Length: 126
Image (tube, rainbow, N blue to C red):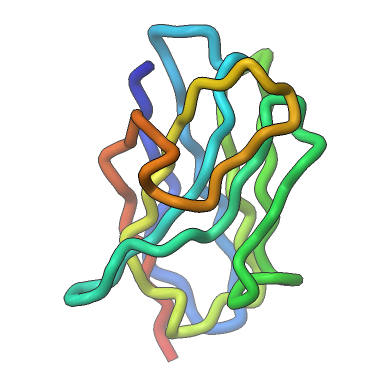
């Protein structure tokens, strides 16, 4: 499966952005999906995940209550709605896909995802 992330940009603190990740090449609904982010000099970290069914949507504690992950299987697209953005949210955001036969499975570790998008930069100014 090929993944194309988009929607990043420059936003002021307190603002919102919605990231999208368009999937192609395989049946999107066969994959659990995730968002990770990375800043220079740091490890890539988990942000949010969503199961094939969309029924499980864990998020990292650092973004709980501010970020929402969702998916549209008919459009083969993953989303990350980011509200109340903070300067510390500045990072390159990556979407990832992991094949699974379980409708409610999701992963929170990079190693659980075999396919990755190219990343989209989110910059939050003071």
